[in-house]
Length: 569
Image (cartoon, rainbow, N blue to C red):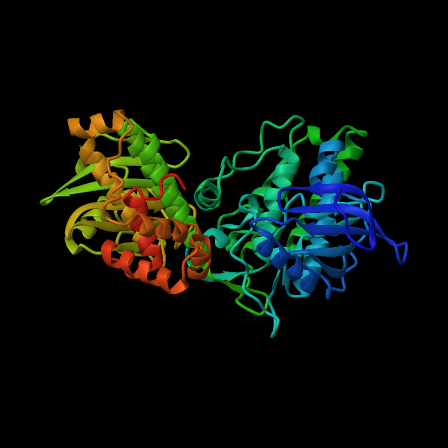
């Protein structure tokens, strides 16, 4: 049991590797409180910052349903936040321990939305909505919201930029996308949709196991059907949740108030159905559709870029995902012995990193074009045999040929509605939204074209940089070459590497430095870790840049991953 001076700890109610939360009593005032303390460890600084942020944001909100922070204390290197005491449980725990009818679910959902609406009126985005940050008092079913460590102010001088971090399973597509844009309350509504889906179905709408896979799922995978639950979820509730999970903010509910209107209408229908069925469980019936006029009105409503929105600076999070993709590719090279499976893995990593549904690698040999690999997200169609482009109908031929002729990047943000490929047979048939054709140069020669497609989101590929995609595609090209080389196959089967580690390129100390750069340490932190001067670290980095022929930190880490220098990090 941990201790906090001035407080008597009674019961730990939540503990993970970073924080511990407990019921306690203030020994001076005899008031019951909740104590949340950061554990000392590698993330202490980050978790302390989140607690300070929660104290600053939630402390000034005059909303009864917010778990109020009372004070912020320091204990050693950790911060402790004292919160008002609430005898409640998380929504996750409540749904596991209680049988919740459709009518009760809608009533709870309306209460939660009213709290989000109040936050929106106070120009605050929560940015961390999930089953663990919504608290319910079981007896009264009162709703409270906590977990403001990632919250964002959207007005005036206190306006702030969202933190890079978040909870990947609940982060909206616009928070995962590579394009700098704006986010607003519709991002919180998406997170609430994930929460509702999970609580009602007992599972997540997507299968994913790491931040890169979650980002890809939010951008390029359609949610699993809510059907199959026993007893079944009413159609009206199912459609509301799926609308919350729309990939683009414009297709979701535009405000908490709009969603409340539909939920209230749904509640009236459920109550009427219960009366009609003489008390039978409403979950046994599919409900009639909501009034289409109401939904059409909502769809024509849009949220403009006002003080209720904040910019998303995607650069930092995108770089985190890029690094995750490179690490994943490096691991695949060190572990995968079969060339075809390695190729499949690399192509899937490309899809994940780009947020694409379909990817294709087209080889350029003179004026001839050959499809050498094609994959679809979710384990769909996969081709790893060389096929002439004209014999493969899974890409827009005109776009690929355009890249081959111009030797330049081609991006189409809404292919079905605009652009020079709008009337091509492929676009008419497949109705894609976002298309990308990226020329891949190896030693200054156009070697292949990376074709990517997303049919769910417009403008999905408007990135700041295509450097990592180019690197991953180049790796795939070499794998394809080695697939037909007996020497390459022998190396793979013996657990070798297509790219040798190339440790001769850098000195042992330089390898130590680049590996610490890869995990995000600053020059000062590297110096402390290696017991050398900061100036010496700067010299080593300068030599690394020169040897790897790069001039930026991310380029150096990327090149090191390709050379196999980061495989066991």
